[in-house]
Amino acid sequence: MARLKKSTMAAHADRHYLYQESVQDTEAEIDFIEETWAALRERPAELLREDFCGTANTACEWVRRDPLHHAIGIDLDAEVLEWGRINNLAQLESRQRSRILLLQEDVLYASTEPADIVLAMNFSYYLFLTRSDMLTYFRCVRESLVEDGIFFLDAYGGYDAPREIEEERECDGFTYIWEQASFNPIDGTMTCHIHYEFSDRSRMERAFSYHWRLWTLPEIRELLEEAGFSDVTVYWEGTDEKTNEGDGIYKPAEIGDADPGWVCYVVAQR
Figure (cartoon, rainbow, N blue to C red):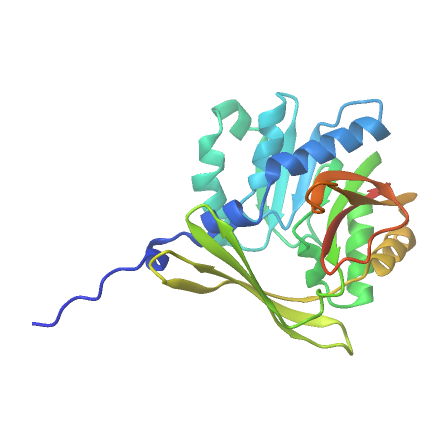
């Protein structure tokens, strides 16, 4: 009688849970959004729209913060939205859950109530590969904001960004692996994968894959301005003097460090 193959940790792992644990820091993200909004506006923000929301993890964090907070999450993927409903929205109190609306729609065509804040995080908007498509998206976002609304994005770059490399980071119970599999210097497109490895040496290959364009900050800023945003500011992370690593504090900047890898926020006021 043949022996059954032992089940692996990778076979039992949930890729969406792993993503939330290894990629997202929704508390820090919403902290930045609330602090920046308070510095720029004299009224509270209530409605947040999370574009490319995935599991709506960030939208859930927003509604948890304040009973006046409402959120709309938009994503094309029905499977990931359903996972968010079962695993994230289900963890909320019923009143909190009632203040989140999830839509399976294209962000270019979604018609929603004008929001105080629109988010496009985790470089999700890099999926637009041409200048015309990106400009169309930014114009759609501007039209979806209230008169004094603000658009929050993140961006990444550095001289390692276009390289074909693989990087590992230890997380609680697994290893996160980011692979930049290919880069085309002619049009700026690249293919990236996220893999996960476990203590039993099993591996979840290509848990997530992305084909996007490595947009530069000058391109992003110029397109936001062309789309009609009145003020576009880069918020750059400071450096911890003891560790020489990022300190998690982002401030408006016109000059950034020429690091091998950096992540920043872009804040565009309607």
